[in-house]
Structures are given as structure tokens and as C-alpha cells.
Length: 442
Image (cartoon, rainbow, N blue to C red; front, side, top):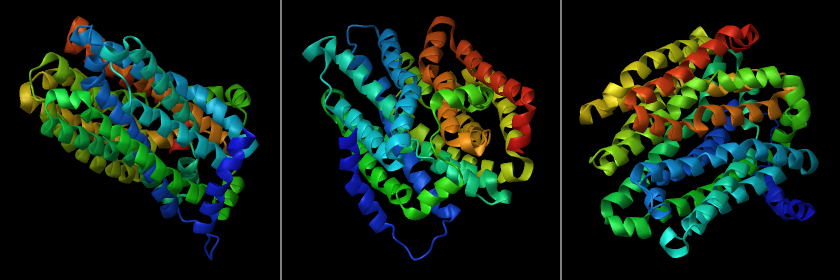
């Protein structure tokens, strides 16, 4: 561990030199830039793997299974990162307390980049047999551990440093990384699918997006270190008491806030996969439609999602974040009842499903980070927000593609709509029961 500390020292020193300025104030806009860069890189990684889980791994790693079972097996490996993420948070919080945030972030992002680029060199089942699935599981667990350590505290710092009348606006900033990452990832896969034949794409074309993800991780590492390692930010983290607290103590003292914080954004986190990964798997497995065309539809939907996320910030500052979360959860519950008919309604229905779904996702997901970061006292916010985010993704998103596809294949699309409805109900219950959370969000 000391060796890791020494090896990261030049990076931290370079970041401090690059970031040396003649003033000591830090503006929320500067924090927002770092947050967007970091989140876009993480979500691009996320969607590159997610799309490959539908288009590549079922045939590349599980060719001996029928299409639905192969995709379910691929989604089972997909969930491993969400299971590993809380473990990664605990490991890297200990590194943070002992060696500092810069060392933690450097190790985590190098692990994330290494795990991601390793997927690009994955051998197929035809080459190594079942070892292909074992290697993919190891790489996926590495990604999950690294994501747990990539929490840099900038989102919490942004929330604390935002003007009181613009807290909703700045709460939506981190969430912009999701649709931007999806747009870029979908564009890359659509390009390679559209220009290469099926055999060439499955043999080598799918690997290139993972190389791009590795390059973005390197850029994001230096961009985030440039901020985190600067004297101004280090002092601001300390003044805001955004330091890593021990995970067991945080769980003991803040367990109620962590549970409520994990369930409050459940509707948006469930919808997140229901309009991104699941519909792509539905089209690929159950229809004869062009996957490339559907990726383009996802890109169009993601553009609507960007606009909706921005609108969520404006609405939250006008009516309160809790109200935005509550109203959108109710709208998601209604959408869950009609979503199966739209998704099964041909090209027009699919387009309507994606656009309406992304609008609702943007409005709800845009304030989900506010629900996570605003529910803790300052001393517990850094670690508590990280753990809450990990559990929210695990409960709301980790098993969503697997559960939705299994339900749709077993009971029909109406069952997948019921799964989404359960997430909306959980959010409404969490917001209704926790009056303390309601006061803090508003």
C-alpha cells in the first residue's frame, strides 16, 4: 500500500502544479465541471459493458445456451459489479483515511481502467471454454470494486457549496453524465454494427468501445485529480467535514438515513434500466428489428433525457426536490401500466416508450443525487452518501435487467411493467414515511 502511495505522489504533485492559482475561492461552476467529467466517464464505462451484455456476451461467452437463457446469464454477470461496489467502498474508504483522497482515486480509476480494457481482450467460449465466463466475472467484479472507490466527494461538495436558491439546479449536474455517456456508447456500437458484418463485429469490432472507455478513464483521472489534489479543494473538503468516516460506524449511526436514502430514488433507478438495457434486450431477443436502429432511438431518447434533467433542476428549485421525486414517482407508476403496450406496439410504440420513458427518467433521476447527498450530517456525508448510492444502485438497478427480462419471458411484458411499478411504489412509501428526509430535501 505504501508503494501505491509513493507511485501516486507524482500525479498528485503534477495536479497541484497545474492547478496553482492566485485565488483561494472555489466556485460551484468549477466543481460542476469536474463532476460532469467524472460521471460521464463512469457512465460511458457502464453503458459500454451494458450494451455488450446484450449484443456480444450472450453469443461470445454463452453460445451453448438458447438466446433468452444466454442473455439472462450475461445479465447475471452484469449484476456482479453492483454486488461488489459496496465492498469496494469499504476498502477504498480505508485507503482514503490512511493515504488520502488522491491516492484512493488514483488506485480506483486505474483498477477501473484495467478491468475495462481487460474485457476488450476477453477470449471467447470457442477459444477457452467456460474460462471465458470466469474471466468476464473477474473483470466485472474488478469494475464494481473500482466504482466503489471512484467516489471523489465532488458531488457532495457541489451540493454543500451551491447557493441556497439553486440547490436543485446543482443537484442535477452530476446526473447529466448518464445520458451523455449513453449517447456516446450507443453511437459507437451503432457505428460498428452498421459498418461491419455480423461476424467481424462479434470477432473484433465490439472490442473498440472498451479501448475508448480506457482512454476516457485516463483523461477523467487527471481531470479529477487536478481538482481533488489542489490546496483550495483540500481545504474546502476539510472545512465542509467531507472526510472518510469508518464504514462500520457510519452504518451504525446512519443506518436509517442510508436505508431511506437507498429507497427514495428507487423509481428512477429502476426506470434507468427499463429504458436503457432492458428494451435493447427485448428487441434483440424477441423481435426481428434492427438493433442499430434501436440504438439510434435510444440516442434520441437520451437527448430528451438531458433536457428533462435540466428541467428537473428548475422544478426542484421552484417546488422542492421531494415534490419532484414524489410527482415523478407517481408518473412512473402510471407509465409502468402503459409501458408494456408501448414497447410491444411496433416502431411507433417503441419510439414513444423511449421518449416518454427518458423524459420521466430525466425528471426523477435528475434529483436522485440530491436525495442521496442531502440526507446526512456533514461528518457522515462523504461515506454515507457513497454507501447510500451503492445500495440504491444495487437494489434499484443491479438486478433490473435480469429481473425484467425473466419476468417478460415467463409472464409477458405486463410483468416487466409490474416490476417498474414496484419501484415507484417503494419511492412513494420512502418519501411518505420519512418526514425528516422531507424537511431536508425541501
